[in-house]
Length: 78
Image 1 (cartoon, rainbow, N blue to C red):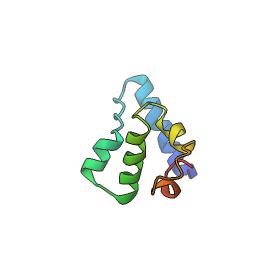
Image 2: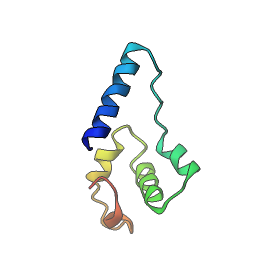
Image 3: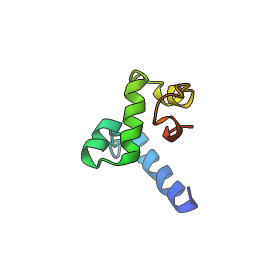
Image 4: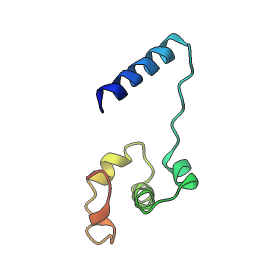
């Protein structure tokens, strides 16, 4: 991140910590895909579902050893 973005992020975090504003909740991968589907996001969702939707899916995908999967070479979080 550049210096301007880091400064803005720091100000945002301070305002959230002080209660001045509420934190913006993050959308799930499924919610983002529903709003604007992309090929990359489809691959992420496929891998996530294949790995069992666990909270550790990013690590699980990174360590995937299923060489027979046609999407293996395109998996995210390598």
